[in-house]
Image 1 (cartoon, helix red, strand yellow):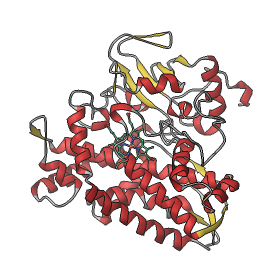
Image 2 (cartoon, protein in one colour):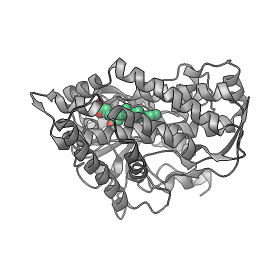
Image 3 (tube, helix red, strand yellow):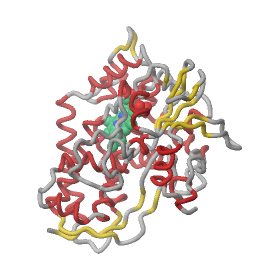
Length: 403
Ligand code: HEM
């Protein structure tokens, strides 16, 4: 499809191939200009839903109590009916239970626990980058990005090393696929495997507590009662899914962007821009989650459009993060961008619980690249993942020359 054909209603946002086969940024530019809030017509397989594209609309809707998460916060899940973890898993629980559950999970990430984990991220990242430097070609996704976030979150949860490979494999199938024909049954199966795995582990930690996040959650109470094993398992699932996929793709997109913009890499390498500022631009540029889904619990108006109670409303972060009303020349990768109030971690009550850790991982990666790498080049074609939720690639063949 040529870029001029990308009129506001021409793309099927339920089809994972849409996001690989089209210039979606061109599409979103048209939507923001002509049709910033629109009703996505039902397809053969799916009901219709609202699409919200402008930063000025998306940001306040994240905090609007008329929109709830309990029916799911990912479009594919909400389209198929209620999220089975609604009311149990923090990301899909609403007020009043959401706040105490979130506080409990937050309290498990004490500075002492996080400090140890971030130290380990530093050691691991430095070693992985060092092993890759000078090789003729290697897959950055498999050999570096796959090994940092999953190990980090598994360290927090004390998941045995031998089980981490299975979790990574299931995670990669849970929200995306490397094929255009995304099989929702495979995805569902993978999500179930993760929850079943954590039910066993949660029961084990309840019986024999250790010094890890699962044991902490297992020993605590929310609204006067301990979490059930099922509740513990879905919240571990939330941490693994949230902690691995998005961080992994942001690292992959970040390295690809640095290769595509050698001037920006040079600015980072020479210290002309800070690693902290670069991290924020990588997060904006990559926007790991394209959208978040909500359900209206009462009639409401969004930018002149009448939304009915029960309607699905999708907030397109990928569009808001590239809204020219907020970001100057949004499709320029500008590591020194300031201000850079991207919405990649969401906003409001569900603001990402792992933002500190995700930033630390990216900061460590960029720091390790600056310290050890001179030139980076692409050595093959990046392989995109097929998803209407997750942005990025799962293969990135590259060469890193030493400094
Ligand atoms: C929530 C993005 C890393 C755990 C969220 C939300 C977004 C997001 C957009 C809001 C969901 C909503 O409003 O419905 C990201 C990105 C990451 C990242 C882009 C990496 C670049 C992490 C990590 C962890 C994590 C490392 C785990 C340690 C969570 C959890 C929630 C969440 C548990 C739910 C919070 C709540 O509902 O109160 N994340 N995330 N995320 N994230 Fe992350």
